[in-house]
Picture (cartoon, rainbow, N blue to C red):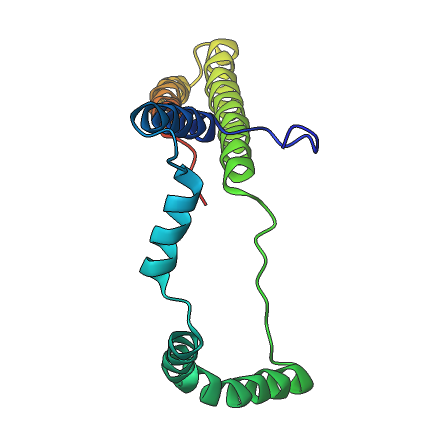
Length: 175
């Protein structure tokens, strides 16, 4: 693994060390004991890879997959018909879950800025218009609409901020 640049998993290192310790301990008890030979003999008996058992395993697996194999030509024909008629639709998600989450946060920020700007500018314009109108009739209505606009835009801004903060606390969806 080292020669080919493949990193050795730590669990494999621990397993190899445990096997070496076990083999050393068994050799102290019996100097003729071969761990590899004993393991091979045990596995040979457990797996029983004779020609008869291999054939029975292959037959059993073939019988298990036979229904799927029978349906396969029909499925291929259905797909071919859909391709020929132009009805085959393949949906590909252009954004990964992480990219979608980042895009949603960016859109939320832009929405927040737009709502804040429009609400503040329109309400401020109404209040400034009421100041320049002087003592004319309708000034009270303009001031009332301006203050109501400030309150409504503030409520809207608080709702958008709450949504943004709630979404930032959520982990990005896994895919």
